[in-house]
Length: 145
View 1: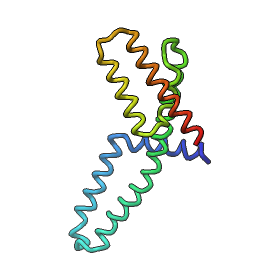
View 2: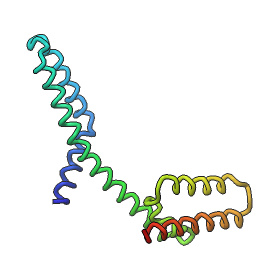
View 3: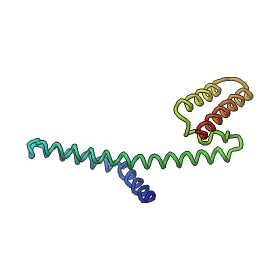
C-alpha cells in the first residue's frame, strides 16, 4: 500500500506542478465566477466552489507531504553518502536532521562563527571537533531517551 500511495502521490505532485494544471484551475474558477449570474449568486453556487477547493486542498496536503518527505529522505541519504565517502568529512554530522531546532541553531552558529574567523586551520579543526563532540553527546542523549 505504501508503494502504491508513493507512486500515486508522485504522479499527482508532478501533474499539479505543471503550468497547464494551474491554467486549468484558473479557467475553472473563471467558469464558476461567470456562471454566478445564471445561478443568481445563490448559496449553492458559492457552496460548490468552497466545498470543491476545501476538499482538493485537504487531499493535496497529504499527497504533497508524502512527496516532500520522500524527497527529503532521499536528499539526506545522498548527503550522508557524500559524507561517508569523503575522507575529510566529519561522519558525526550524519543524522543531524534529527536534532531539534535549538540544537541545530546552536550547531549552525558554532560553524558559522568558525567559518568567519580568520584563525588558523587548527582553530577551525578544534572548533569542528567541539561542535562534533556536542552533536555526538546530544545524539547519544536522544538515543537514550
